[in-house]
Image (cartoon, rainbow, N blue to C red; front, side, top):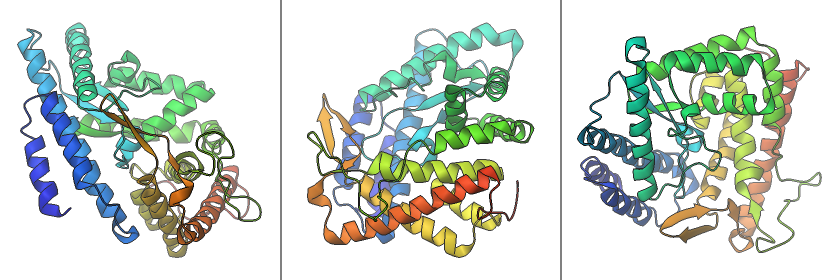
Length: 363
């Protein structure tokens, strides 16, 4: 695998003629990704991998526009942006990726009905094409064909107001999902305005941060009080480690909450860490330690158990015992201790207790 291979693949994705072409090119991504890279190159590897995923989504949007026009519905009646959430929004998708998506379009009251008809058809077509290309829809229904995640900018703002005003568990979960959203196709200005409105709401709803903390701390780092790894004890995954929910997600959540409190619009976890350091919320040693741990978690995510069913690749998020060598276990124990320390720091910072970051502020 080298940069020229990826560059040629991206060019071919950009000229794919249908979902079948996109599926073949997604299979080529796996072929180019045959060997897990060394830890020192993992961030560059993820950038290339996610650039390929982005290109497939972007091409699916363009193909869907053409199909919608052929159907007689026409062209986009107003500017719009297609968004990715979850690991796609953070630029952290692995080989087995589903669809977490949304859509925002410009407010034009005189064309509201036309816009809803058009974007309902467009988003449904995009989702279908990506399913055919090997990307299953989000199990939680956070997807652009769902009207709840496909709105005009004004409707999106009103929905954010409702979530901020009534911070139930589900509303807070949705607000955290929006924090990871980014534009992958269309008019980025719309997503930028949506995110500015989102961050502008944070200071006037201080209770929401406490609710976000509860959600953020839901997943615990899988290291015991004596430094032992907390592996699966029963079933077919006995002896495996849940890297997704026991390492990766806890760190993603903790860094995201710090970034939200700091008013940082970045979605990548690594970029959030860098911006938190620049804003004075982390010092260089803290940033470096958290970055080292997170890069290991990214590498281990590529080692999780994958299955292919009906041509769709999925992962259970587990690293099998056979892949947990002594060196890997030693690295992992240290990284998990760092992740656990980060969770304590975030809790203290959010609750205003001594020992949390106290420098910097909203930028």
